[in-house]
Length: 178
Ligand code: IMP
Image (cartoon, rainbow, N blue to C red; front, side):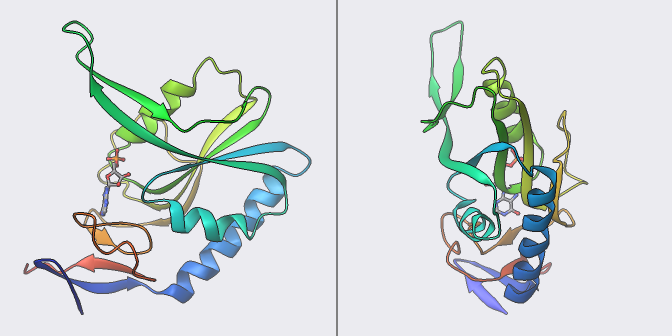
């Protein structure tokens, strides 16, 4: 059991299980995208660790760009505006794979997909380490999933609780009696 700020967590997915899963995800991507030009878009902050380990298992002709969703107050009529920052590579005619740490409600991924619409990518898909099917209300399910997990809060391996816990090398689940 570990403590992050005021909450306690239990080990849920070990470093070893993560390693093995990433090897198999890498193999799947290598087979699916063989011979294609690929651009990985790693979504910050949470996906940095997963992206780094996944990239090492990939032997494709590929680039990586680190992107972030940012929101700001637009005009009165546009309200809150969300945009994708950090996309510094041309994705025209390339196969885009979005790398996420977790897909929860699916809101973030839907937003990113709609912001990439019209940029003429050859294809766009989502590779996420974790997926919470019971929380998902989005439009398109992630194509490549490491682990489908119950709808309970997790930290570690890039994922945070109030910005803490990203450095943990395994994934920990919140304890019920918190
Ligand atoms: P969405 O609900 O799919 O849009 O996910 C939004 C974001 O919430 C994710 O990218 C994560 O940063 C965060 N998130 C969702 N579930 C968890 C969790 O269990 N632990 C830590 N962060 C989470």
